[in-house]
Amino acid sequence: MYKTKIFDLDKWITSFREDMFHGIVNDSSLIFEVNDGKIKGELAVPGFEKKEISVRAHPKYLDISGKMEETRYRRIRSSFHRKINFPQRINPETVKIQLANGMLTFEVSLELGKEVKIVDF
Image (cartoon, rainbow, N blue to C red; front, side, top):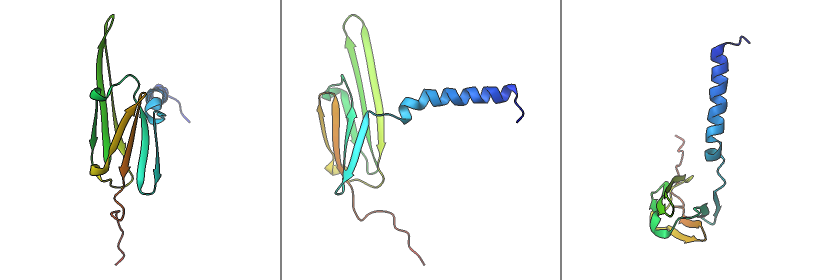
């Protein structure tokens, strides 16, 4: 293979991108399981209070965000945003959320029988 400065630069950019997004792609702060038509999950949100977190339920995903501002010796701001996509539609009316000890737990019901169906003709 012919190596050039462009090849080296491309290799460097690729390794930088992998290092930069490693924590986002392999994030262990979100754990969930699917059982009996329900999805239960936990999201680590240390330091956030209930009033600082917003949860929006959509038919295909949950949109969870938080923003806090704290002033002790100096002003500290922190925020997060997670969009949790589901493999099939959920019923937004059945979403249950709890926050305890820095863990946000959620439970959603899948809309069973409303999956995409391939029809042969």
